[in-house]
Length: 341
Image (tube, rainbow, N blue to C red; front, side):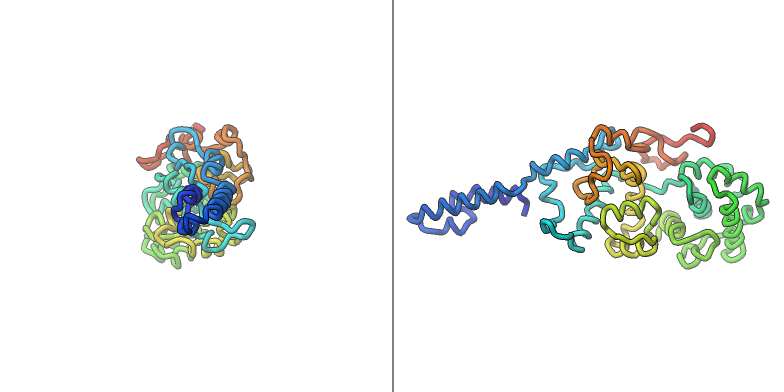
């Protein structure tokens, strides 16, 4: 029951409503008055929704895009999952809080999407392999020339290694990545008829392709639900106490048990979006975070609202996103081509 409702009920005790005291005889007025004062004092000692609104106000983001974030009201604390004071959070309470965070993020980032430019499964597969140890922005700035030169697995499998390396050099670790691209392209050509397979078991057999890459491709090119455990995702789910696992596969398994399968792909996008824009590794923008009232790690970053807003990135901070060709509903501006940033 919301705290405000309890306080209101206590106010009604003196009138004999919703209380065992109200059922007593009129002659026992001293007991009535004593019980009413006791109940009223108990209600006043409880924190009300108004006292919780301070932390909710800290979470109010700024700017046109940030205004999409849900604005907590005075009953935020009452609506939050209940936790025994001083005790550990139960598993059920954690699951409820996790699912509520997902719902809140869906309101903040209704446009969440994969931040790699691609037109088909092969391009997404290649771009995801290239995204290791670099930004999606750098990959998106690199792939136009790459796909112009090698548009199909057959073309890439026949590439001269040195020429391929030179094209992908801006993404870093270009020799190892070129080896993976040549290997997976040859495998697609020889074993899958030049098509990217739509099964996890087949994808992870390709050179340079692990579960993370496979889930990105399955979820965004084939519509097969999957959880993408990259550095952002792993960092945030540990901060939110959804898991304490470090191994990506164990993280994936524990988070998959919390959410319906239908949510896995979009959950991944929302969490990664939030990690890139607000909940940074070194300086989380706690004071501008729209889910601050639900975060058990609130205070690890900057809590001053004005200072926190200056930490926001991409469209949340009024700057371009990572895609050169973002979706039509993306509220930010496109990223600049290679050599112009």
